[in-house]
Every structure is written in C-alpha cells, then in structure tokens.
Length: 379
Image (cartoon, rainbow, N blue to C red):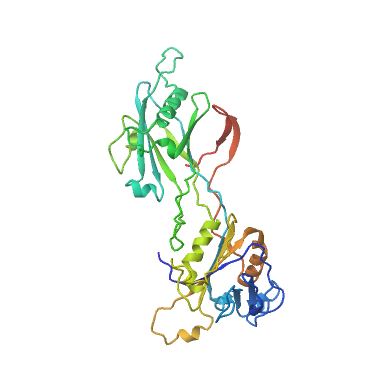
C-alpha cells in the first residue's frame, strides 16, 4: 500500500550533541535538536507539558532559509509512533529434515524452492530444483532390508546437492550457490540441516540519482517425498507421499538501519530538505544544497512519527482528502537512548517493529563432521 504522508527525514550525525540552550537558529550545521512550542530546548521534564513540539536540524547552506524543521507534533494528533532497531546482520533460514520413514530401495526426492526479490525475477514461483536418491539398506537384524540407512541417505543427498548444475552454460545455478548442507548425527535419528547462505551484495551503480539500495532476503520451502521428482509446478508433492518432516528452526530476516539504507532514504525524501530547490539530479552543481549526514559503516535506529495537523479546525470546510505528515529520525545507535527518552516523555512508550529473530532454543551436541547445535523445532 502506498504511503502518501508528507515525510521529513532527519539523519542525526555521528557525534551529535543535543542542544542545551538557544533556539533552532543556533543549531550548527547538521546538529539535531528537539524543541517545545516556545522554541525552548525540550527535555524529559518539560516536553510532556508542551502542547506540541518540533524537530529541527541545522543546515550547511542557510541561504533564504533557516534550520530544517518538522511541523508541529502534538501527542493527541499522533496516529502512529514506532521504532525499528538497526541490525546490520541478517539471519539466514535454517531447516532441519528429520524422521525419515523410507523403505529400502525406494526413490526419495527432496525439492527446494527458494524465494527472494532477485530470484523471483529469474524464476516463476521461486527457484525450484530437485534431487532424487535411492534409500540404501541398513544391514542389521534378521532382515537386512527392513530399515533404510538414514546417515547414508543423508550423505547421498548432500553429495547430490553439491554437484555442479547440469549443462555447459556457466550461468547455470547450482544448489550450493544459495544453500549449505550438513548431516547431524550418525544414527537413525540423523538430521539433514539445510541453511540458506547470506545474499551477495548486488552491484551499486555510480549514478547519484539512481536508487541502488534494495531490501531483500532469501527464504525457502522444503519437500521430501517418495518417488521421482514431480513435474507439477504449483504443487510440488502429494502430501500422502511425504517421507520426512521438514522444520524451520530459524527464519530469515532483513538487515535494518545500515548506512546504505539511510543514504537511500536521504535520496527518497530529499524534496523536503530544501524549500526552494528540486530533487538532486545528475548534472554537477544543479543542486548543491543536497546534504548527507550518513556515516559509512554506522548502524542506525529509526523512529517514525505519523501525525495530523495541530490546528485541525482549518480542515473543517476543505472539500479534499486530508494528507497527514510523518517524520523519520535516523539515529546512530550510540546516541539513540537520549533522543528516545525525550520522545517517549512526549508520546509515551514506543513499539519496536523490527522484532526478534524467530529461532529455536538449542543445546550442544556432537555432529558430523564437527560440533554444532540441535534445536527445539518450529513446525
């Protein structure tokens, strides 16, 4: 759903010091501050009693305009207030395949279907590939073919998964480009662990007016069934033929608050950083008022406040659709606590929308060929 709120972005510089005196015109270039309705410096002690407050930031070039400011933000008119904690490391999906119920000599197929923004531009309905192996007998007891050798079955799958993609085309994609595989355990309870690899960083164009930063994550679905690989596209396997359980033990996540993301936001919302010039264009010198306060390698927490006009009586006789406003504040994590304290004093507790990474509890076990963890599984 499109967001039509009039958005102002504030990127707090690394090393920013919140002002203790003065008003918005005293802000130095890049300095960020919070002010009450009387333009007094806001603190946790006085902002709650103010009917509204401003966010402000000093400019490098103040020609024809003063500090950049938000509209009047009144707690009673705020419709949305949340934060997204920065996390520069994305979690990768981990799936455990266990509880094999395979008859010796039966063909067993594992189909993996992976999704991401880029994969779905290459493959309809995800990147889908299958491998098929035959279950080997477990030579034990009176009938050596009563049970399948689960560790050998898993090893056969891993060998197949790591094979080079068929054909001579160097662009053919192998499983190993997106996954890594591991056998855990040496007995009939052995587990095949399939982990998604971190996505590679996509090429960044040198065009300053381009939009190169993209949200992306890779997740996949796992199907284990008897018989050869199915030709069905939407339905990978008949559920009646499933011969193992696949549990997601860790879900993949997005990175958040990286310097690349915040620099992209500066481009996206630049039209509200200067009041009398247009967007940044390719021509050198066209708009020298573009200011970036992002520091490479810094992780930012972002705060989102959506609100309506302070004086809502002005809307009573306007026969048009009302447009609300929004501010985004990107704060280096080392500076986030002081700014958040003041905003919480004005708006109340804030919800973190990033949320925890969904994973399972784990205990250390001996695995093949090294040591790792087993998990309490997520269905």
